[in-house]
Image (tube, rainbow, N blue to C red):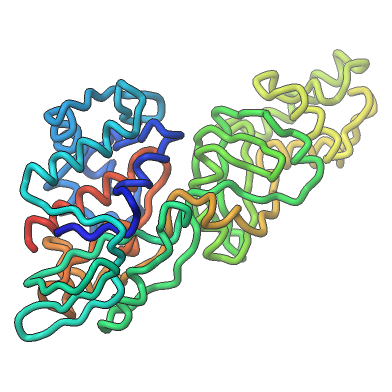
Length: 376
């Protein structure tokens, strides 16, 4: 029996990927596991290798959902309709003998000698085993309000602090907000801890918005921002370049073309509005002939390491996933069974597992959910 809180199942599937549903990724093996970080990747290893992206794709395609690869290693349905994915999973569940009860939110769960006593909006039930797959706190409009956390805590589980992740970022700098609409490719963005050490680095698309920053790279760093209660991000607009060589080129340009504007030194691959803004922030205005050593060094520093304070993300209402959850050492990684409560299985976003944008969180949810289902 599947107890569903909402009037229909799979609302988070329906809104994912802008209504298109980024089902999974093309990454495999160790490369896939590394996307979740060392600790979380180790925990997921068995689940991901038992049910890798190819197996998930095969399951969906066998259920009539044709898939295709898109940019950034993403897999989408060819129909571009998330509903096709949701309907396929519901159809597979019903064909396998599952009874689906909607508007049946779980209200209490108590273990006993013969299994579990379950209270829900739809009535009371008894079960030999239970799989909790209630999701986290992200996108509360889908019914994801963290219902599973207090249930698990009441059963003795540790629930680590939770934070919004994969969310757009708020930046309160007026000059940066004025860059709204600009998209950057090939730029490196890093989150820094309070000592200035790099936590996470991404070289993925960046979108400037009227709130601050969005797109895959900034959203991937939202969990770091929230976990630290705000942090600095560092831009490298020309990753891999040699700073000393750049300075020599700039000096040569100033000697040969002194009448040109200073912002002409910046890479033409960067949009003009951004070049102008970076130059202005460094105080590098006017002609190259007037470029002082201090201003030149400041502009170089910003080009290779501009730091921007980010106080917060836009929160759970805009977050694609929740960071934090049930402590992983309390769950058997080979079965998803609780080490504290026999017969209780935990999967998906309830676990202290999160990955970057690109189908990784769906893949982790489906893989851990499959293990839980097989062993329950």
